[in-house]
Structure formats: structure tokens, C-alpha cells
Amino acid sequence: MEPNHYVQFGGAILIVTAYLLLQAGKLPAESWTFSWMNLFGASALAWELARTQQWGLCFLEVAWACVSLWGLYRCATGTPRRDPGSELSD
Image (tube, rainbow, N blue to C red):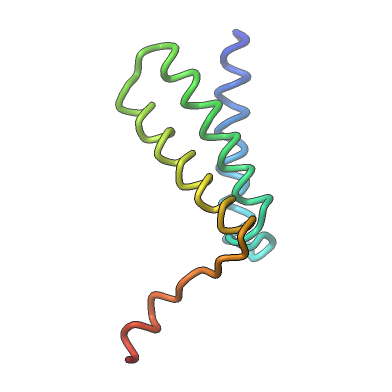
């Protein structure tokens, strides 16, 4: 296996593990760990995709990393997540 494959698998494993833990109820979406796992995973994949000029998928991973940064910002500032169902009951 080539060294870049380790980066690809590592990034994918981080993202999938974070989502698996979220779905299993072991990791809240508002946690630092969830956002960091997604940020590192998406960044690793984006780096490899940019290196190989796979721009469409690279855009997806950069967007994923940006959403993860937003999650980290919310963790740092204590900004609560909005409940989308609350707008329907008003």
C-alpha cells in the first residue's frame, strides 16, 4: 500500500467513526470530539484529492471541513444548536 493510501483511509475512518458514534448515541453532535474528527478526516481527504486534482470531491471535503469548523466555533462560543422543529410549533 502506498503512503497516500494511509492518509485516505485514515481520513475516511475518522469521518465514518464519528458518524457511527453519533448514530449509536455515544457521541453528541455538539461535542468537540465529533467536530475535530470530522475536521481532521475531511482535511486529510481534501489534501489527497487536491494533490490528485479530483476537484469535485475535493470541494465536498473542503465544505465538510468548513461545516466542522462551524461546529468547533459553536463549541468554543457555547452557541446552542437550533431546534428546527421549534419553528413549526410557533
